[in-house]
Image (cartoon, rainbow, N blue to C red; front, side, top):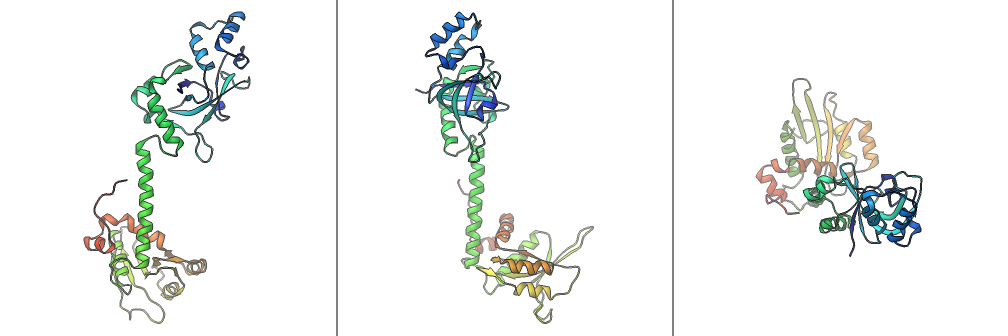
Length: 323
């Protein structure tokens, strides 16, 4: 059965997948057994005091043992390879055992915050011994190791946070797809989308209205005008709304560009994507674009505050979802 061993090893050795213990005057790797090693201690008259058990415990680390290395406010976990070696380049870590540390995909060694450990284990880590048995915490640490090795998290809160982020991204992708495909119950002809955008602007604190079709001349056109006035910065927005599925072209940009109001911000809001040439034309004319991804992010921010009717037409549920 694999043992669990605490080793206060220099962090430099973890970077090369080793854990180390001191005793620079002795080379543990030259000995076939701990009895042989202890005999050389006696022959060389090297005093070990009460550290004999720690020496034996470190020497007897075997392949498969779980190694726990305490670091500042955290621990590192590694699976021992059992390969012994010796080196003088790192102090207090001359005698070494191979240990494959858990790492993130980018190669960074995973750190487990001590706050994620049980109170009993966190207290045990304060022991002053350089090498100590943690077999009594085998179940907790082996479970933690397995979870981290499979890409999980050391803390259930961290796991839920990531799962929640992933669930939100899936939700937003599905919602945008529904809106683009028209698999919702907003009124057709672009009117429903315009009403939705107006509701979002109201939630942002704007006064909104829809100008008449005869308000602008020629190609110039806008679907919504929005106003907000605070103590310092009155703001007027002129908005074109496009309920598109694939790619939104340049027509909406040209409609806005033909409106000559220097003090107004002009926005194209579309449920689709916009091509690079469309973006370049918008930039040239000082027009802002909110495409489908940005729009659904905005919509998500206000989902809980939308009217009951709007939420129903979008197919949004009021029921909480289990991760």
